[in-house]
Image (cartoon, rainbow, N blue to C red; front, side, top):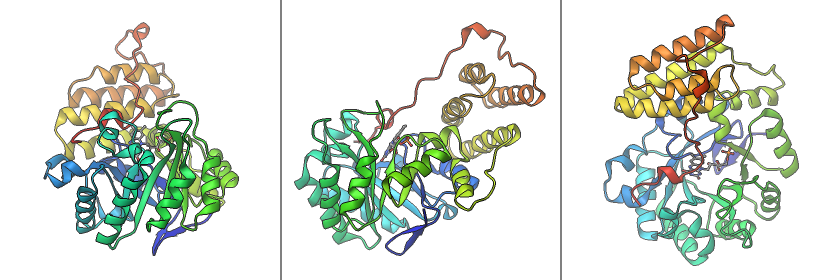
Length: 354
Ligand SMILES: Cc1cc2nc3c(=O)[nH]c(=O)nc-3n(C[C@H](O)[C@H](O)[C@H](O)COP(=O)(O)O)c2cc1C
């Protein structure tokens, strides 16, 4: 387990914040990067249709902070001409790496040939990769799934094709498009890809602890590990893995650290977007973040029913004060009505502009 390079860009530590549409925006990435342990950040997937038609939302999605570097822009689409134009735009805004999404299972994306649709259309995939490769000088990388259908698993072939087109890093989420987010990711495919290509290979899927990260490394010999959902539940996971890598004591956040990170996130969101949108994002993180915490379910319900900045802040204070003092938390006083925020499970909900 050591740092690796994508051409001359060092990924150190070899840990990547996995792209998540509707989650890993500029605020979330900065929040996580500040916790430490992240070697590469990646944008949410960005529609090339939106980018090349000057859609303001798509353009906003390409913003990043210097402190995030190295930073990759991930694009999705099915038209090589537009993919090339969008890749050029990413290079112009200063991204270090251009990543092509070959994994999103959302029908809206696949219908236009993009995302995981590229896994069953190699001539289109090859044309896109070659077009982009000709146009940009920053490294080109891809993120793929195991295959389109459960009976057409072709990650190894896709990786070989990508390498032959000049792709310089391959990330595999070992589920098929058909699988969506069900079952478990097949990490053995990461090992198989690693055996046949010479570019670095990273794996994605279901890593939620230091032990799991080490186990996946040992089993597959992969160069890097991506963590997505696990980072929402535990923003310190990268730092904890890095601590273990260096033989340091593993950082354990206190309840005060947890409160502070939620507040820091809310502040960043409010700087970046309208209040209602910020409250929505806050509910999403609070939902993931407090899973397993004492009184967490009630807290999530309470936050879910908050509609103003003050209300959200008050509820956070009440909850964390109760936990810090070892008092039970009663939320709004209706413990029997625990209601969960909707499950967060894919790029599907966030697909726009395509
Ligand atoms: C809400 C959500 C949005 C996602 N959006 C993207 C995306 O935009 N691009 C991408 O390549 N993968 C996307 N993914 C897949 C993740 O990057 C990752 O490969 C997958 O969730 C498995 O890893 P995990 O178990 O660490 O979350 C998304 C996943 C989730 C849960």
